[in-house]
Picture 1 (cartoon, rainbow, N blue to C red):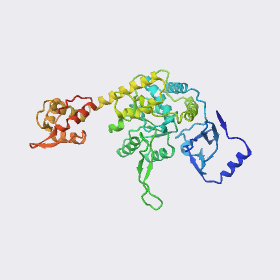
Picture 2 (cartoon, rainbow, N blue to C red):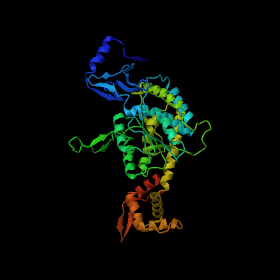
Picture 3 (cartoon, one colour):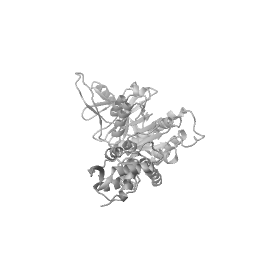
Picture 4 (cartoon, rainbow, N blue to C red):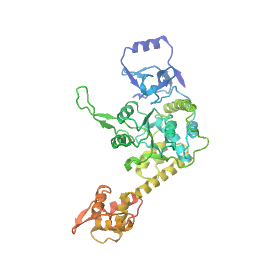
Length: 448
């Protein structure tokens, strides 16, 4: 049940006296005693308030809160540029979420009304929205991604789904990376990033730090700052949290690629009932749902946690690790099975992509040579010959043993030794070759 601050003279006097104490602006805070505070923005006024959930479950809408340690917490000003421009969205009140199942269905219906997604990904997106509101109950998170060419609905998906997420912070490839570090560290919440595949390599490297470090709690990004005396003062920025991303291509870092749950956009005709422009009603509907989602956060926080029984057999440990948080909040077993089916297909796509890479080509040749090799090791010259034989007609120049050795040592991380004047992969590496072959979807024979 929701309540407002009691209108007693004592309460008003206490607030008046507290204004002499320096204040700390916050967007959200979970206090050591379990009290939860979330900022509200009522844009029509405009004014900001704090929604508070006490330890006993009672809900309050207050102007400020003084902690037992004497710290006076107040919401950010409604004139803060990030709030006033809609760059960061907040609820306006504590709604009534009712039943969790009804809330999920309403979120999915909202997404379906404004965005054309495949049915499995629509369910994934709806549950991901709920996950963003309790993400701080988990240690690992996946990212949601929309990938496709321009004009395929990526930005529409970001705006629609992002408007429902917890403290969404909207940014684009035109942004510099520095404010992204600072806002994520100060506000937390969900990064909604459009055109994530920045054109310039330095920006790509910087945003990759945010994305690589942001899936696991406790892995901040270090940035070198200077103080007023121009002394170096390195600072750690927390970038952990959910992220909804749109991009045209893919990241060259396959480890980063494995952190995404991806919808390929533009794969079919747009549904006839999807409007070309963004309807005015979207903004008001999204605000009502954010209010209900805030109530669900207050009710669910402290009760959700990773459920190891929902790990998926047959997919890579990395995908299992990141997807577990999402699966842990899906109550409907049939929906969970459909999402698992999509995860298995995602794993198959990843294996297929790895199988078409340069490393897979070299590894396949290593496996072929290993089946017939009788010597002390697998010769790099033999591997190069095997690649050239299979690629006859496709390559202008033959592959050299030196080039093969570079891939073997730097990409596959296999050892090489010199034997009888030539470089070979020793037989002691055969077990590692077998493990790599399984990862790349190949077959290898392991010899003792």
